[in-house]
Image (cartoon, rainbow, N blue to C red; front, side, top):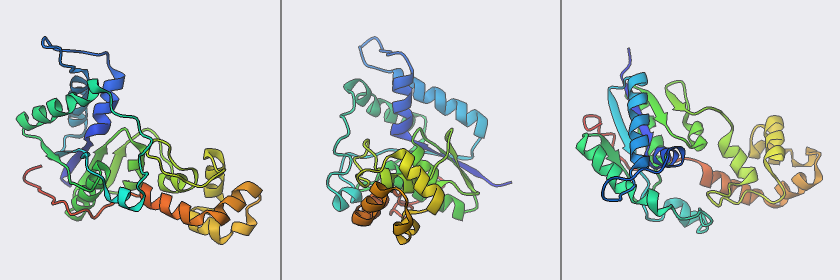
Amino acid sequence: MCEKILLIDGHSILNRAFYGLPDLTNSEGLHTGAVYGFLNILFKVLGEEKPEYLAVAFDRSEPTFRHAKYPEYKGTRKPMPQELKEQIPLLKEMLEKMEIATVSLAGFEADDILGTLAKKGEEKGMDVIILSGDRDLLQLATKKTMIRLPRTAQVIELKALMGDAADNIPGIPGVGEKTATRLLAEYGSIENAFSHVEEISQKRARESLRENYQMAQLSKELATICTNSPIEFEQEKF
């Protein structure tokens, strides 16, 4: 039986706990609800998956390699609520006291760390479980890597066409979710759709893809999780 590693998208699960539970504070007025919810989720999944190894990945505040490609990346994202922001160091302190490894890397998002660790875990013959509330992580699913999410989609290709307002990924003009889904159902990828662009029946989508294919390619790059970031797979630490 293969060893198993559980990789957790720290900010994503903390965010889900924050919005899913009542606002709790301690005697000093420090907000604690998101940390409480995170730990509840952690213990539940540990009980269900029973992994031998565990790590929690976090984003950092510095710009990433995606910002170098597209400075406006995530430019429209609203600031994190202060009540949530103040719980991040508390959660990290809790995880440290529990001797749970946390990983982050300047220039890369938590998604990239999760993708890299998942790939390296697979190479070591492990079964990998990624816990996240972000469906972007679905692109990492393989026979050895399971993403605990309720639905599946061609996330990268969809974002290449329709963009993503949350991350300020542009996509191409005039193509929404319905049109993007229909194009992918028919052609499978933006590359194949472009090679058959004159066959696309919807005029607006046909012209937009023809005129904005480079932007679609850039959007796909921005939406693609990096799986070869320079992060070490510290097995004993995990």
